[in-house]
Image (cartoon, rainbow, N blue to C red; front, side):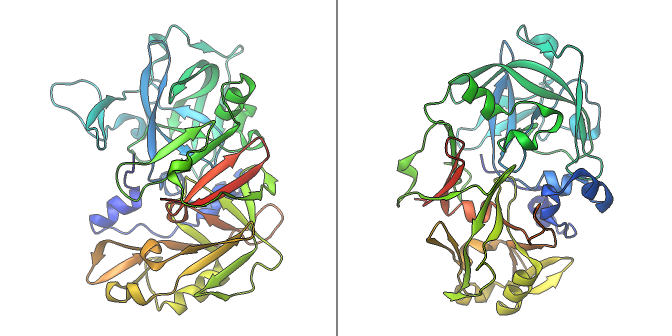
Amino acid sequence: MKGKSMRQSLREQGVELPYVDPGLKFQPPEVLAASGVTAESLLYQGFYYGVISVGTPPQSVPVLFDTGSSNLWVDSVYCNSQACSKCPKRVPACSKCFDCVVGARVPVAFGKFNPQSSSSFQWTNPRKTFNLQYGAGGMTAYLGYDTVSVGGISVGNQVIGLSATLGTAPTPFAGIVGLGYPQNSAGGQPTFMDTMMREGLLSYDCVGFYLSPGETGSEIAFGEIDYGKMRSQVYWTPVTVENWWQINTQGFQINNQEMGWCQQGCPTMVDTGTTQITLPAQAFNYLMQAIRAQSFNGQYYVSCNTVNSLPTVSFTIGGASFPVPPSAYIDTSNPSNGYCSVDITKTYMNDLSGQPMWILGDVFLRLYYSVFDRAYNRVGFAYAV
C-alpha cells in the first residue's frame, strides 16, 4: 500500500517540517543521540507498507518493509506512548483501530499486538529488551518469539520486538520489518530474512520490490523475482558493506554530462525506508543551482511550469545507466502558489569509511524493480513496467 509520509501529509495542510539529514539513519547511536533529531523525522518518512500477521490466531499488523534497518518490531499492549495510543482511523461502533487496504477497501484490524492472545508466543528466557536509536528518543522493546506470516510464508519462532516505549508520532503502520543485514540488528536478534533462510522457506534467498507510483499495485516478493514487473534484464552490482544494502555508484550525470564525483565509486545506500533520493551536499547544491530551485525551511522548490524543461539525472550502477527524469524527482501533486517541491535532498553524513554518502530511496525505486540478494550479496535493478 502506498501511503503518505508524515512530511507529505503535513505539507498538504500547509505545514513544512524542517530539514532533517536522512543520512543520520545510517550513523552510530552516539552520532544520532548528539544530533538532537527527533525519531519521527528519520523513522517515519516511508511511503509503502503492507500487512503481516503475528501470533496464533493471527493478529494483523501493517508494517514498513525497510531495507535500511534490520529489526522486526510491532506496537504492543505494553506501550503507552502517544505513538502507540492514537489510531489512524477509528470505525464507529468498533473498539479497535482500523485501516483500509487501499484498492480492495478491506478494513484491517490492527490494535496493539497482545501476546497473551497468542498461543504460540514465548518470552525470551531470561527476559530481554533492546533499544533502537533511530534518532533522539528512539524506542525500547521487549523480545519474544512468535509465528510471523507474510505472503503465504509462515515463519515459526521468529524473534520479534514488542514496543514498550515509542518516541514518535502516530503513523499509518504499526511496526517495521527490517530487511538489512544481521550485523546491523540491535540486540543481536536474527532478522526476518535470516530466519526464513535458515528454515529453508525461500526458493531463493532474496527479496524483490516493485513500488508503484499509484496507491495500488506495489509488491514485495520474498524468495523470488517477479519478471512481469520489469521491462529489461536485471543489472547486478555487489554489496560493498554487509551492514545495510550498500553499493557503489560508478557515475552521476546531469543531462548526460558526467560530473566526475563517482570516479572512485560513491558509497550508496539502497533504502526502501527513505522516500527521496539523497545526495552529498556538494552534488546537491550543484544540482539545485542547475535547476534554479529555491529554498524554504530546508525544502527546495521550482516553478511547476518549468518541470518539463528540467534536466534528467542519471546514476551509473553495475555498468548500466539509470536515468531519473524531472517528472520523477519533482512532486507536482500538491503545488503551492505555482511551486512544486523537489524530491531530492542532501546529506552531510559519511559512510563507515568516511566517504560522502548517497541514498537511493523511493523516488528512484519507483522507476526500477529492485532485488536484494542475500545468496550472492548483491543488489539488482531492472527498468520497471
